[in-house]
Image (cartoon, rainbow over all chains, first blue to last red; front, side, top):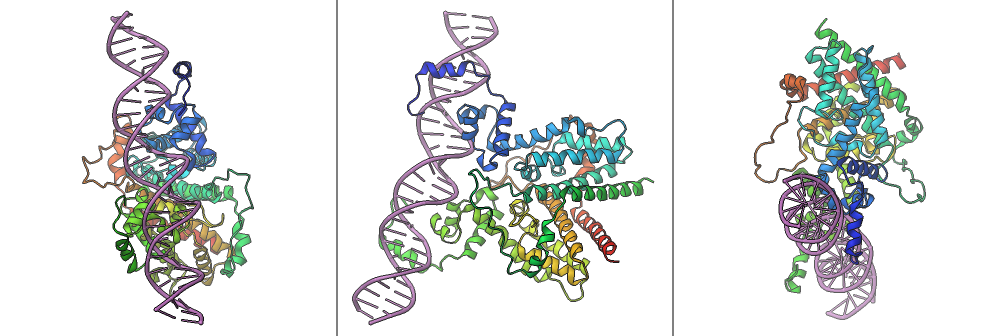
Length: 238
Length: 238
DNA sequence: CGGACGTGTTTACGCCGTATGGACCCTGTC
DNA sequence: GACAGGGTCCATACGGCGTAAACACGTCCG
């Protein structure tokens, strides 16, 4: 503020603000990312959206990088607490995996701008696999499967295959939406489409390529995966 | 240059440089990314590594963002030109897919810092799926499979499943290496490891979780996928 | 009442991407 | 040889960025 308000005013402004908190910071950051994309998330803008100077944020977050990690953790932690993904009384292992898969997919669709980060930030340990990337998730996943009869190795195998499946499908699903560019203005001409003149086969197949039922593809792929995992578990411990 | 050299000197320096080119710019940028990570790639540093002022680069690249796209394209184009991934005389469709999978995996391991970009940058059209993300690749992939007896729908199905598989496995493979943080200095203490005390199951299983034979996992997953694709193709056109 | 503590502000530094305009060389034409 | 034109690169500048450091202020505890 070059021409600041009188000191008393500033002090007064400080007094009865509800005050920041790590959760408030993360929520505001998440909203900035959801509308506008990662590029919109700067410490200064985040501060402004919280009615605070940028530097105030550093009380709650070590650095911008740590803020991004915090976002990823928060979103996945919230999912972990979601009753819809918890292992339920009557569930068998396949029901459990379906629940988790649906939950993660919901996260990906709710936060398409964040999901690439969930998928690509370096995990805490090399054996942790995005998107199930908190220790809590790994623990919960492995115990969940073992409580439904999986061997240790079977559970580990399932964890790996399951994580790869989710990343593979969901990353493509959110990137297909082309969420990155941040429209912002009321949009000029719609994207000029692609010039396929050099690619005869694509010209022929473009209509069919464009038809994608992502719901169907995801659940079909998931059932295939479950079958593979089940088969493997049966082989290992008949 | 605050205290510049005499004008004649500067002019002289300009005279007999081989001159930039888009390829030289991209190669230099790729090297910066490979050592040091994306964060190291700034226009100024890239200029310095080419012995040129940052602004000179803008003759060959519209913006930093376009530079990133250029990197992704270049790497994947080079792969497309690699004889080892071309469809060969005696190949059946499965051989072809194995070639491509190996090639993409090689790219991921050669450029682990770039691969997340290959996987996550918004593609040219919504039906283009990373990492096979140039129109040329889509065209080549679809014609390759059709030349080996696949129907149009079968080829499209295979394209989608194959791309998801590659992203899922390779992204995890490169992120597991924890390439992001840019060591730079001779490294202080090795990473302090994770505190597992709150996660009994993880403590028990950590040794087994840490054992990963990524080669085996990749090729096993690939063979599973090929079987699924083949089965689907057989169903559709018996 | 006085100090410690926590919270948010101020200021400042160095880096970033990039718009703009100018300096220089090369080339082609007479 | 002279000279105009265009291509290539440089110099400068602007606004925004992340963040270190010192500081102001309100609160609470003795």
